[in-house]
Image 1 (spheres, rainbow, N blue to C red):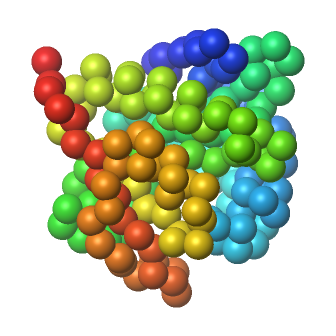
Image 2: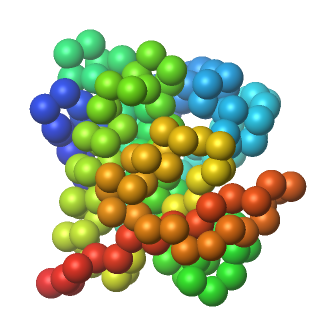
Length: 176
């Protein structure tokens, strides 16, 4: 079961089949895919990724939430802990990976910080691991700043799909 989380302005919602088209639109916006893979993806790949996310919640008890504005219900982003086998090796692959993406109109307004703070609060209390990791394109200054604000620290550069990405980790100060 996917926990529903509400913040002052946002709802972190379970991925439902009815939301797939909004998800596909979101991840195929140029301002979203620019730092992910540099190109739009076909619907068949997006469908597989969406279904894998739903399955991750069932199999692992974690995944990505859809981020919706509470005042309008509009989907503006996605945050959480994707089930991704990145191949970065020891110190990364064995830990849950944190991730976030937001449409251009939602960037720079504190939504990502608000949503990821709530997601990390859930993660910290869930006790699944003593740390979370993430990877960011070094050119993505906004996400690098956000990672820093969320308590992630740089660990190393690692090649991924033809580019060197910055790896980060965030250790949980105390587990229950």
